[in-house]
Length: 436
Image (cartoon, rainbow, N blue to C red; front, side):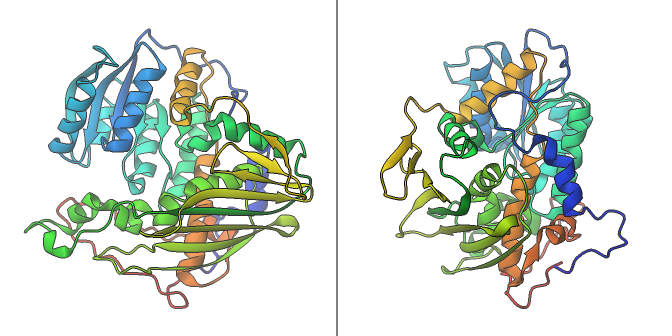
């Protein structure tokens, strides 16, 4: 990715980014930032769901659990069948009583707008990530509180759109909680606080892995129904297309990217180099199934993020944060710190909370308290860290933070036509694929 010309008025310098975000650099998910009094809400908080798949249905249930007076009144997805299944499942649950009051399910690519404008107070965004910049912007413009799943975008222009929406949400005193759930884990919060207090000494390096099975394998082209358009086929198999899902690093291992940024006080790296590729042949799509990224942070701090999606392999979602006086281990049990001699210096004790539920508990409690919780820019910057690693692997080049922050490459078609054609470029070839 060649960098944006120096005279580009839209270019965001790294020093400007640090200055803009420095006020929240040390924030941890627990507690609310200093926000002025919130919007007045009625006794019933009306909730709308955009994206009614498994994650979206789960988020709707967590929203209803978080507040005894929350009501699910609107739901949307790409077609009636998906919406109908989710509505039936939620209405049939005995946990929510009569609080599932879906007056009319919406379907189609414009269904998100109908939910937002249906009179809801809170919007849950759980569609494929390629749609999130558009949906988040519409929700904030309509003065809605938002739960936005991760990642927030699949390309740099989308991330910048989200940054603008996040800042607007702050000025409007709207709650905006992201799906970066580890920031809401009491275990990891306690571990990060140990690092903040100097328990492992000066930070030396961070090694992070997300090794797992394939998420949504691509069906063969022979299973594509006759007459189905490129756009519809890709959306129905969204995980396998970079413009929709962002690739495995950006869609899934972005959780690890977020933990990395959290440990680093949400201050960005200077550059990244990476390798990646497709080890197991796919039926279609254009995503890699493995990445290995090396990020360079200031003061010679190095972070290594590896992920893989393959069957029959060693799996593990783990973080090793190494310091001069010990190592913090996250994953595979309660967080713990081991000293240079291998002895446990600290270990989390107590009951782990449900971090997925905690996200919604915090969101709804903050609205009720008149102090809407806003996750600030980490929704965007953690996503951008993953995009940076993906671009370094795709191109085989060293990519700087300024380059990826200012990249003008937009992956998402505009407009998106349900019946339209859209050719994907195929797997990126390092050394040949353009950086910007």
